[in-house]
Each structure stands twice: as structure tokens, then as C-alpha cells.
Image 1 (cartoon, protein in one colour):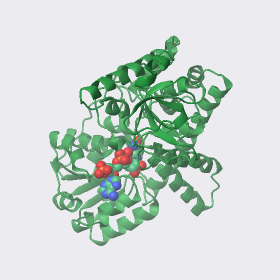
Image 2 (tube, protein in one colour):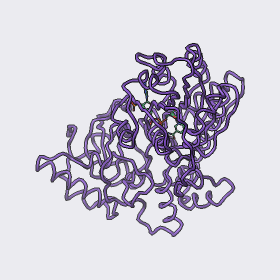
Image 3 (tube, helix red, strand yellow):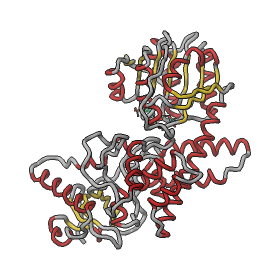
Image 4 (cartoon, protein in one colour):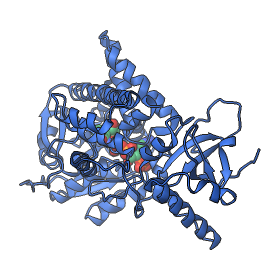
Length: 480
Ligand code: NAP
């Protein structure tokens, strides 16, 4: 049997489907290899940005088999994939890097998307649905680059509704987008507080949130573990702190929005952390979604040093963060809530003050538990439709006109059909929220059968390498 090396151009195939232009690549470190004893290679398929462990006997050298396999399909997805690999081969011959590695892995199809996103679903439907283990490298490895001209869906002529659906998904690909989230941002009439504001954690949510604080006229100092993420903020007029402690020392009110409880603790009690800068009267607002024990722990640490503490997790997504339309669930120190009010105005469309510490986090977890369960159920419905020969686009049209129509069905359903899962709400965070809500149910002896089952699907999706993709990628586990 032929053996291959990383970088080899090949034809690779899923059982029962045509050979497809592909490349042998290195799997990301958190992508597990299937436990099968046969020789397998990790393959990236051109034109789709999709990956799969593939048996060696279903892989053939590209050049030697060009004539044999290049007529495998007349569909434009296949022809575009051939064009992509030819381009890559040509570049290699000239000693240039294969730019399609970045273009196809890049999956940042934000709203104003053109018609040119790689379409994993498409390749999958042509190549088969029996991927051994599909996985895509974490988003952090991708760079933003120009997008390729590739088709976006099946070549059968779409109905008008289908075209609208595609367009909608591009305009608003995010999970919990408000129904009106695709409309332009209405300028808010905000009088910014004269208190200096710090913002720690510039991830998917942190960047647009901090930008909105700056745009509303606040004096903002930012810090992020990976410094490069501070650049758009500095360009917009924010200052950059050298550490969390440095930001806290220079600011009156400090927001934090990081991934999980470990990150929250690192930020507060770590080396050059928040606690080293906290002094009487300073306010610390935790916007990350974490468990109530963590919130209690950092609240105590901050208030023991004379600081004030507020939890303020947010309901929304990248899009609503960009548009200043988050729903903010604040609880804790009311004086801090009042002092930070102009910031909440800049960040959200509605801020709730929910009283005692813990109420904000609990509310947020329940919201996300429902969202996660519903998302998993939607993925199952669409998968079942495929197996039953029910047209998935038609099903989505029906759902969008039914009593369960909502932004999640509209945007995530479209993302699933497009096979395109850019991280708006990373699946690993959705799984964290499922776990935390189940933990809450456990402590309160509340049975949570549905959420428990959905959590298993998110765990599985994470295990096959999709943790950094959007939560709608749960479809990959459901539809395996
Ligand atoms: P994200 O894009 O994954 O960003 C995570 C942020 O946390 C990055 O700034 C990261 O820094 C930082 N971080 C991680 N570990 C750290 C550590 N040990 N020390 C310091 N910083 C650390 O996450 P996100 O989507 O912005 O979400 C942030 C929080 O908001 C999460 O709790 C999430 O559940 C919640 N949330 C998210 C959404 C959404 O739609 N995305 C919606 C509502 C709520 P680096 O850049 O250096 O990695």
C-alpha cells in the first residue's frame, strides 16, 4: 500500500462517494485518531475546508491519478476543488506556500458574507456522510484572509426561499441573535461616566464590547493575555495595560470577560493579577459565564481588599456584542451597578439588576441550558430529515414559519445547511455552560434529563475536534 507524507497532494475518498482533491495534513493536537487498526491519514479536502481521518487504501497520489479521478463529478463544488488543488500544485512548483491552507481553514464568514464561503456540508454530501472522524483545527490557528470563490450549496437550483435563507445566514450567522440583529446599529445617546474603565479579556465577546465602550466616549484601558488582540482597541483610542494589576491600578471600574473559571481565577489571583491592583472603592465587574462558587470566591477576594464586586454575565452573541445589543444580567453591588450604568448602556439593549450575587449567573446558565438543548434538538431534526429523504431546506423553511421559529432556528439552521460553523459562540463554551447548569441541577436536586442528553452530544462534538467551532457544529456529532 502506498504511504504518504504530510503535505502530499492526493485524491481521497469516503466510502461510496467520488474521489476528491485533498492534501495530507498534520492533525491538530486535540484531534483524536480513530482507534481502528488500519493505516489512516488526516486529510484536508480542497474547496470545503473539511478534514477527516481517511483509510490509506482510499487515498491516491494526486498527479498519478489525475486523469482517472478528475472527472469524478461535474458539480461546481468538485470542479472548484480541482481548481484549488491545481493552484496549490502550481504554487508548490514555484516554491510558494499553499495559500488555500489558510483560506479554507479560515472560517470567519461574518455577516456581510459574499457568496464565496467554503462549504463543508457540500463536500460531505458529495463525499459521503461517513467520515471516520472529522475535525477542524481550532480557530486560534486560523488567519483572516481573502475568501475563495466557491459555491455555497447544492447545485440544484434553489428556490427563492432557499436563496433568502442563504443570504440570511450570512447576514446573521449567530446563535442567539436578536430578530433585528441584522439591522444597523442605532446610535445611542449615552453620557459616559467620567470614571476610567478597564477591560480584561479580548476574545470573541471582549473585543466588540470594549470597542463599544470606547465608541460611547469612555476612557478605556485594555489588557489581553495574547497582546495582539489589543491592537484594534488601541487603534480605536484605548490605552493598553501591561498586566491585569496595571489596568486595575489605573482604572476605577474594571470589566472582565474571559473563557471559563480557570481564566477568571488566573486573572484575579494570578501573578500580576487583579488583586494586586485592587484598593478601596475600585469596582470589578465579572462578565464571564462561570459557576457561582467561582463568583463567590473572587467576590470575597476583591471585597476583602475594599473593592466592590458585580457579576454581569451576558446573553447574546458576537453579533449582539458588536451591535451593543447584549442582555446584561447584573447582580451584586448596586452602587457599582449605578456607577457603571453608562457602560451597560453602551454594551446592551437591556440590563437587569437581579439582586444578590449568584442570580445573574444562575439566570444566564438557565438561558444557555435551554439554548444548548434546543440547538442539539434542531441538529437532530435536520439530521433525521436527511436520513428520511426530507429536504432539509424545506424543513428549515417550515420551521421558520412555525410556532418554534426564532433567531436560533433561522441562523443556526442555515449554518448547518451551509456546513459552515464559524465560532460565534464556541462549542466548548456551550458545553461548559451545559456542564455548569447540570451541576446547578445536581446541587438543587432538579432532574435535567434533556440537558443531560444534550450535554453528551456537546462532549462528543468537542472530542472529535470541534470545540473551537460554533456550537451549531453539534450537528457533526449528531450526523456522524
Ligand atoms: P473566547 O473568544 O474564547 O475568548 C476567551 C478570552 O479569555 C480570550 O481573551 C482569552 O485570552 C482569555 N483567556 C482564556 N484563558 C485565560 C487565562 N488563563 N488567563 C487570561 N485570559 C485568558 O471567548 P468569548 O466567546 O469571548 O467568551 C467569553 C465569555 O463570555 C465566556 O465565559 C463565554 O461563555 C461568555 N459568552 C460568550 C458568548 C459568545 O457568543 N461568544 C455569549 C455570551 C457569553 P487569549 O486571547 O490570550 O486566548
